[in-house]
Amino acid sequence: MRREEVSKDRKISIRPMTLADLDEVMPIEEASYTAPWKRSMFEADLHGNPFARFFVARDPDQGTVVGYVCFWKVFAELHLMNLSVHPDRRRLGIGGELVRWTLSWAKENAVSLVTLEVRASNEAAKRLYEKLGFKLVAVRHNYYRDPREDALIMNWSEG
Ligand SMILES: CC(C)(COP(=O)(O)OP(=O)(O)OC[C@H]1O[C@@H](n2cnc3c(N)ncnc32)[C@H](O)[C@@H]1OP(=O)(O)O)[C@@H](O)C(=O)NCCC(=O)NCCS
Image (cartoon, rainbow, N blue to C red; front, side, top):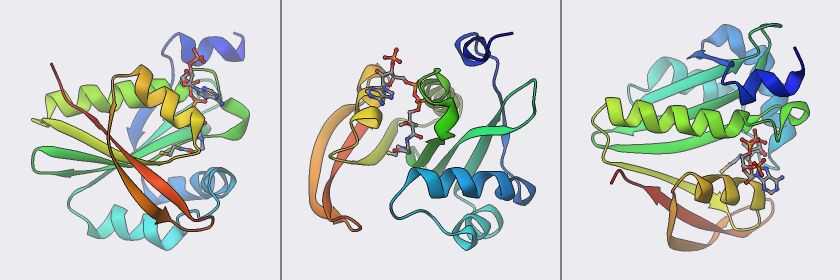
């Protein structure tokens, strides 16, 4: 099977993230952000945060982690905190599949609003979110550091 078919055919497997996944998650995290989450941040949310829902996507053939999505469900709102795809596996549909899966999860779990922040310069993520129905609702000026940059607030709601 060609690599492209794995995600285009919706054949990644998505499972709850565990501490055992972090050895594979951390290199993806560090390759994806100028200010990546530290391992201790993942550990704290996985163990101590009742709102946190973290999931990994695996290649079904190799079993390796190819991406992950992390969100908090806070009553009827879902806050999308982290979406990352392995640099070697981008542009194959995996990010889109993870977001679509998250929106399905939201519908099944009484979520009326999905919200996220994205760096103003992050064209890949902005296009992905727009394509899946997120709307720009606000700008937080100079929200990010390393480098300093505006955050765009994007929301999705059903209907
Ligand atoms: C953003 C990210 C998760 C996208 O994952 P991905 O698996 O490559 O995305 P997909 O292949 O599902 O792309 C879906 C659509 O998003 C848009 N897109 C994705 N990457 C893009 C890029 N580099 N440039 C322009 N548009 C892009 C396209 O519209 C694409 O559809 P197409 O391939 O049919 O044109 C990935 O680039 C990543 O991990 N980036 C680093 C971490 C990050 O910035 N996360 C978002 C934080 S808010």
